[in-house]
Structures are given as C-alpha cells and as structure tokens.
Image (cartoon, rainbow, N blue to C red; front, side):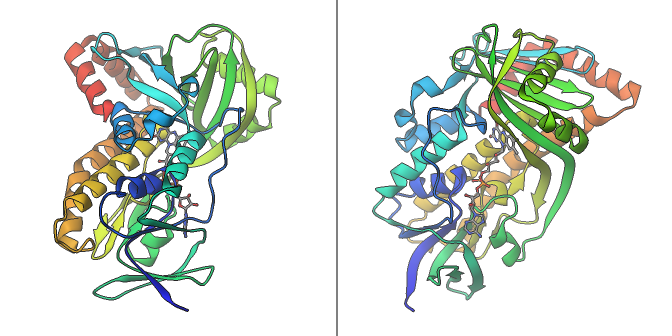
Length: 386
Ligand SMILES: Cc1cc2nc3c(=O)[nH]c(=O)nc-3n(C[C@H](O)[C@H](O)[C@H](O)COP(=O)(O)OP(=O)(O)OC[C@H]3O[C@@H](n4cnc5c(N)ncnc54)[C@H](O)[C@@H]3O)c2cc1C
C-alpha cells in the first residue's frame, strides 16, 4: 500500500478541526483531514446543539468567507445578558451601554459544521479521509498514521482536533488532569409565550446552572447543567412537564414554554492537558482543554486555538511546519486565554455548588457588587467578546 505524504494531517473535523483546515487554504501546505462522520445536512428543524458565538469567533469565520454564507434567519443576536445568583442577585450586561451592536450570536452547531464542510469540499490543497485513526508512530521527520480503511499517511505535523477523549493525545503520551463535574448539560429548544428581546438569561441555582439563549422569533434554546439524578428525572418527564419545569426554574419570565424537538444530554468534564505541543504535534479544541459550558466558551476557545495555530503556520516562512520551536509559539500564545477561561468557569462552578450559607451570601454579594461597577462590567464583556 502506498503512503500518502502531507505537510499537515488534521485528525477530527468538528468545528475546530474543520476551521483550522479552512484557515490553512492559502498556506501553501498540503493538508489531509481525517474524520469518520460526515456532517448532516441541516433541515428546517432546529438543532438542539446551539452555540453562543463570540464576535471574535464570528470575525474569524468571516475572514474565511464562511460567516457571510450563513442563513441570517437562523441566527439570533444577543443584545443583553442577565445572570442571577441563587438568592436573586443580578449581574446584567447590555450591548448598547457597552457601545456594541451585540454581545454574541446564537447559532446551530449543525449549520456551522455543514457550512465549514461545504467550503472544504472545494479546497484544492486538502484531501479528506472518511476514516478513523488506528495507529500512530513517529520519527524525527514525521508522524505516521494508519487509518481503519488501511490508508497510510505521513505528515511533518499532526494536529489533534479529535475532541475531549482525544485518541491522538493519548497515543502521543500527553498527560491530562480531568475531573468529571458529575453533571450533564441538558440541551433542548422551546417556543416561548413572550418576546425575549434578544436577552440571554442564566440562573445559578442549587440544582445547577440554567441558561436560556434567544433563538429567532419567540424561541429559546436551553443548557441546564445539573446532576445525574436530576438529569434522568428531567429527561424521563413528558414534554409538557419538562417545559413546565424549565419555565418554573426561570421564574416564567417568558411566560409558558412549549418544547420543540427532542432534548439531549452531554456529560460535563474539566480537562487540563500537560502540553499543547510536542515535536510534530499540536492539540487544538477540546483535545486541548474541556471547560464547563456555563460561560458558553468551549467552541470559542477552540476557534481561537485554530486561529492562533493557523496564524503561526501562515507566518512560518521557510520553517518546517512541524518544527518544535514554531509550535511552541502557538502554545505560548494560547496559555493565558485557556488558563483564564478554565479558572473562571471551574471557579464559578465550584463557588455556586458550595452549600455553606456564608459562601452563598458572599457569591450573591459579589454578583450584586460587580453589577454596580461599570468599568469591571466593561472589562468582563471585552474578555468574553474574544
Ligand atoms: C451541553 C454543552 C453545551 C455547550 N455549549 C457551548 C456554547 O454555547 N458555546 C461554546 O463555545 N461551546 C459550548 N460547548 C462546548 C463545545 O461543544 C465544544 O467545546 C466543541 O464542540 C469542541 O469542538 P471540537 O471540534 O474541538 O471537538 P468535537 O466537536 O468533539 O469534534 C471532534 C471530532 O473528531 C472526530 N474524531 C474523534 N476521534 C477521532 C479519530 N480517532 N479519528 C478521526 N476523527 C476522530 C469526531 O468524529 C468529531 O467530529 C458546549 C458543550 C456542551 C457539552
């Protein structure tokens, strides 16, 4: 069997791996992308996987000519955010007050994925392998992959974009510290009685964190991070009881809710990896970090990895794309952002899980206090715009 030789092989074409491949279209590098699952063609039903896409991520997608192709009728701008503590303390953000057109956009995962995939079909420096990786080995000059369709690939650089359980990361022997939050993120979509005015709402509750994200017209998408037993109860409820429970948990601020489409639940984990790079290897996206979705930052963080790594590779000059010094530049550029998001999301999760009444008082006072300090709020907004 002949070996296919590339400059870079990207393993995994989730949103992050696919975005990296697209960002490298004018890089002069020969690329391969390995992904066993072809993204589904979106239908009229709304995807229950919804992302809050930051302006920074939108600008990245725009720079690749893909943002412009999304159907605007499927995107909801976020004009404000209301975050409530477990005793009603409020922290709110307003795009108008910050001098911004919007804080984020709410979009369906399958449309982003399909848009990227469609663009990749026309990319002349890219070959897509519909297969899963089976073996990985290294020499000083290259990484060597055997796929489950028996294809053999070699590349100067292997990029792991294969998600939180990254096979490439474990084959490469990069250690990680992970913690299960013993929670699931339940996602579901609802029609609502009252207009949401483009406001994203979040409640830090005793049973977890509930987010209501605006969708076009009178619809919302929810992410409810809650423990296993509560997840099972909610998923076993009939659609009317489930909708009623979600409406009640959100104090019926949008009136009654009606579920549209099926709910799904995803286990929530924290993962910090020992290194983002090794000679001839770089990790991006969830392969490089897993964070609690309470700040809606996972995919944004991954897109910033893809943007940073593509920037380093585009500016490589005559350097070998798998050169360790070059890859270290990518690793250094990402360290601060990843650490900050991990610290904030993990810290908030633990702070609001604490049962001690003094901690409860302190966290709610903190929220209320932060709400009165406009420069602090502006700083938080600018950080989240990413
Ligand atoms: C409930 C929930 C809500 C969330 N909400 C938000 C949000 O609002 N905003 C946000 O920014 N983030 C959010 N996230 C986080 C976000 O989903 C992830 O950060 C994001 O999907 C990671 O993308 P990725 O491309 O790195 O990995 P993945 O999406 O996991 O993609 C990995 C890809 O690799 C492929 N693959 C795996 N193994 C192999 C192999 N051996 N060979 C070849 N291919 C392989 C898989 O098929 C897959 O396509 C949320 C997460 C959860 C659980």
